[in-house]
Length: 49
Image (cartoon, rainbow, N blue to C red; front, side, top):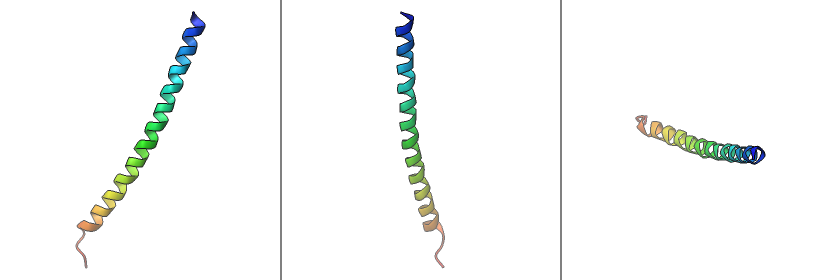
């Protein structure tokens, strides 16, 4: 009984770890996109000389 419970906990933890990795990738991509958009907005906001 205890062994099955331990195996299940290991599965849950591994699944959670993988989901966190995927979420980090998504957030990193969104952050890079946001940085590019902010840079473009700043360039557009500056008066052209």
